[in-house]
Amino acid sequence: MTENTAIAPPEAPIRVRIAPSPTGDPHVGTAYIGLINFIYARQRGGQFVLRIEDTDRARFVATSEQMIFDALHWLGLTWDEGPDVGGPYGPYRQSERTEIYREHGDILLANGTAYRCFCTAEDLEAARQRQIAAKLPPRYPGTCRDLDRATIDSNLAENRPFVIRMKVPTEGSTTFRDELRGNVTFEHSNVDDQVLMKSDGFPTYHLANVVDDHLMHITDVIRAEEWISSTPKHILLYQAFGWQFPRFWHMPLLRNLDKSKISKRKNPVSLVYYRQAGFLPQAVINFLGLMGGGMPSPTPVEIVNGAKESEIFSLDEMIQRFEVPNIRLGGPVFDLTKLRWLNSEYLRALTPEAFFSALRETVLSDQYLRDISTLIQTRIETLGEFGNLTAFLLQDNVMPPQDVWVPKKRTPEETLVFSAEQLAILEVTEWTTAAMELALKKLGEEKTWSVKENFMLLRAILSGSTMSPPLLESMVIFGKARTLDRLRRFQEAQKKLANTRK
RNA sequence: GGCGUUAUGGUGUAACUGGUUAACACGUCGCCCUCUCAAGGCGAAGAGUCCGGGUUCGAGCCCCGGUAACGCUACCA
Image 1 (cartoon, rainbow, N blue to C red):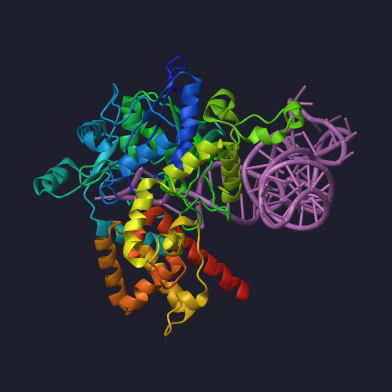
Image 2 (cartoon, rainbow, N blue to C red):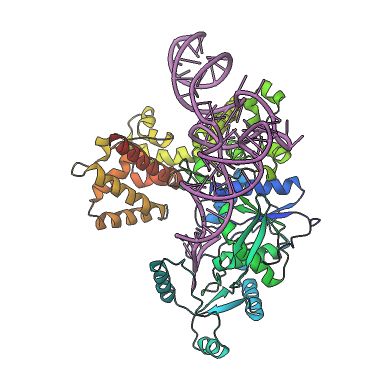
């Protein structure tokens, strides 16, 4: 049993953080965890820090960071320290802190709690396969755990690439306190020798996270439940450095309707989508506040006076009444139906003037209408026909009939498969006409779909018709988040239809 | 497979330190209002609290044992 009672001193000023990775669109899960952290800090006069965890260069998306800032601000969340506003413990972007991690890696190397590992990816993969075949848990085999000095020096002299791994004790266990569920124990035999520093010189989440939380004086780590299993690694790391560790709060994971962890396949998860599709930020933040409990239940008096009001509250009201320790631990389903209802309540509460403004700032903004108008100027004969060609860009959803989306020489089944492939390609394609055209044509060639069939299918799904303004330009204007959502909805709807036919 | 977490109607939540027929909201259905559709009003159906034991006068709340779902099991976070 490892000692673990030391936590941040209770009198220390509260400091919390969220640490999103800029790997794509800002995620509702980030907003949810952000909201809880924000409330916790505001309730206690503490500081809320935003840290960008951009240590994964393979998944890094350059535009992502700004989108995260924008989305959180849109929801009304503000931070006291971060890459954009600075602060006393910066830099707040992990890619700018590599020297710090290197130094800390060296500390662990020096005190024997970590070691250099020269195993190649192939070695590791081979060992992994052997273990899986033998029905053993895949674990680092420990090849480099106790290399002698001479071997290490000669490997280094040969410039062999290496990673730094944590030297997890072979025996005993680590217990930590989760503030929401009590003590949680992991046997060390179930904790792998985690990679701390990758061979590219960047740290992994585990190292960077612990080092930064310590250096930034974080007192409470409020994060998603998926991190519970790696918390013992973090505890071990704090101990290896001889640091006190923060309190840990693991929030339940948002779920799809089928209870799996929320995912884009089954739910729009991009905050950009919600914004562009015309959800009000108050509604989204209110809905997030409903997830997992935390707000006090309505008193009998409130019920008599209209209990409906008890589920509608502003960010300020949340700060006043939300209680983090009252969080429910069962993963709440992120149910669009209720969010839409909430949104409609907020919409109706707007003054007519404010409602009109909301429209003009989003789905009918000058910019949006201007972009659309350039597409159709040469395609209509009277201005009155504006809506004829552009309705699909102003609607929330369209669903083409089968005779529209299935090409003449194709079956519905193969068409659906190809559509799914288009979707997969578009997800990872830069949202410009040039990039999309290239990617789509490449896919078409590989799967022997003619350009005409290829583009017509997309057109049908996006516009609901075989006739529309230029496809790629329309997609750019409609936006990546909404376009992908429409394609996914089409897939899901067809799947459901196919199932009901069976 | 291993480890961990969780478990109240279809969904989100409630139920004081165990105490009457498990409450509220969303959704669904019906009726009213109404030129339509929403909104609004009224009403209904829907869980006996994952299952099985135990403690107790009494258990959704406590204990034991299962099951299921979810998460983790990467040089991703």
